[in-house]
Length: 540
View 1: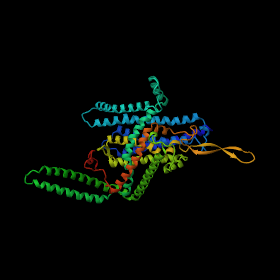
View 2 (view 1 turned 120 degrees about the vertical axis):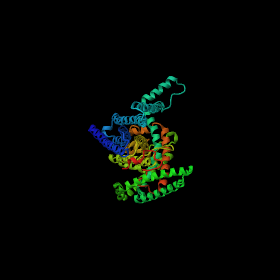
View 3 (view 1 turned 90 degrees about the vertical axis):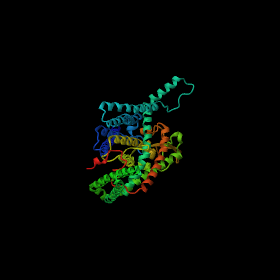
View 4 (view 1 turned 90 degrees about the horizontal axis):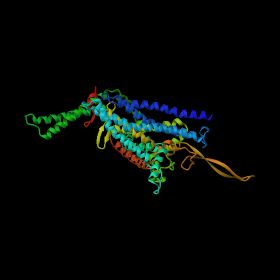
């Protein structure tokens, strides 16, 4: 009976995980195909982008399964179920999740440090028409070796950084070396992998602060404000064209008698001709947008967009408030910087933490909620990236446009989204630390109660408590994801301050988005400083 219960509950968790896996693969395929350039589409870059994004989302989908398994080991009264009474059985179940994390995180390291860099540099070299296939592969491999060296260095640092106090000064050099190897062997490579993933998560934190925080403000407000009227924009654009043409004719009239234009006039003429070219391209795009049925459907669905925008801004504000409460809780009740601001419970009421704990007993609901949170991160991150573009400091590298994104830009996009989704695991922990650590586990506390009556004495009574740091080790099982998130305290400290930076960036983005007017119906399609291919070849 216990074996059947174990099998049925394990199958339930993994069946829903499989369903989510299929949904993730379908979403990634549609997502990448939507932004892929029609003229420069490449099979290898498309497959690489879809797989990279899918691996990141699948890793996030494993978190609820981990929490579900530790929670379903116990009854609501705090006692272990029959199939989980054996400590060995519980270890086997958690090891299954641990191996899943090992596999997915190893694939992420392979994608970030080997596969994506190789494919990116391969297509960078492809732009050179004089280079053959072998030269492209060789040059791509040269650049990829640098990324591989960084990966090896991170793995070695993570493997040999001791997590416990080293031997004393009186120990021999051999004992110290032996201690390091014992540390490596006893952990089976967990610190090495955790250090590497934490380093990537640190980069993901910067991407979240830059793109996601801005996207969380700009996406809802754009939905609420809507776009400008395409008819009014065409009329305004026509007037601008007439005005620029008049200025050009005025400048050219200065040289009708054969006199050359001054250098200043030539520069102004060149600028006006470039501006006229952009305006004419803009007019063609506006003409297509006016005839496009999607524009008409979008106008009809205007009330739905407003409601969706209000919902998104409420979710963003809830998320920000919950993150602020969590960080305030850590500031007041943690041991400080030296402990990574880690707390093992919630001392202040956190709305998301309470909601997840309430939904967790009905397994699909909390799974759906975390999946929605992850998807919300991806959508708002994409909104931030699309509005800002991909930048390297002050240099814009690429723009992300539907059906106009180059293969290299797609790889950059998926790399950023992969790192962002990696950081969402810590963000979810920040919002609901108790949920991520223990799920809905409870444990029994035995206490002696004096009895009154004919027979005086003490009676044993048990009360249930929610699992926290004070619980006995054999009564509460910690999720495997928590071990990956908090193997190194200094990363947790950086993430803590990153959360404050995220809140600040969101508030600044919210103010900036509120001050801006309505965006154009062809926002981002035509710009003077366009670094991608000309849009003219896409206009039919």
